[in-house]
Length: 310
Image (spheres, rainbow, N blue to C red):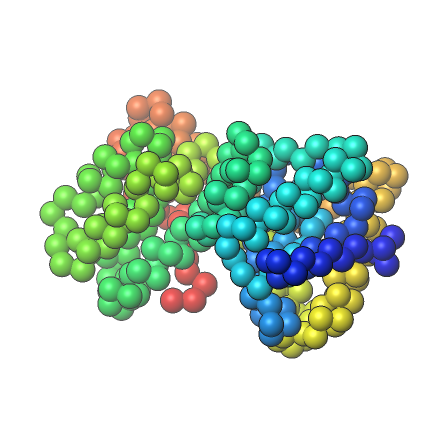
């Protein structure tokens, strides 16, 4: 039950791993994992609370939490090694096929080393936020907000993520023809930081259904709201996680018993579903040759997410 949360202490890399035994087989039963970190509610001596989530009948549920002092490769390696050993002791194997996460330098190689063959999918929303932060850093914020052509050009640049992977560099070059000044600097940034062989596949979302960790952002907001303040004490945070584990167990029991089904659980997001259908249709038109690359990017740019803070 929720009161049976296990707390694994690690003094070498300064992390605390929190999970319930029943959550590990549940994690093993899913091929798509979502990972992210949150910062506001953790005790002051920790850097983040890293969590692993899965989709259960269309609803995102948390299964593992980890309080960490650092965000380095050895820490993530030990977290995953500990989980793999625990899974083996419970008679299950952890082997996700896809992990959706941000573009954190240490996390991605740790996931790849711990789970060979896994596909890393960077969060498209985080990619857009990174580009827009660069827009602000370059002094283009006012032009983006008030000049329609500038905004269209930048959103078309971010829309290149929806093209087949090999076509993205050519699309960036197509859009970058004749750009000058600060806009040219933005294109240089994207080529330098995001179109390298290792980086480009992480933010490409051609024919990808789950493109972002936005569900996790909603979960972070809920946890922040329930916490009611920043930097909880360790025991305040532990109680918050116990309560959240209770909600997770209730959900899993309802699904197992058949008391609820997917349609009962799934939070309908009609706007997202409409966007997904429209992008799928536009992609089919582009693949079928009825839209040019520029026409496709112009149409998809309309659906590129707006910044939360800018």
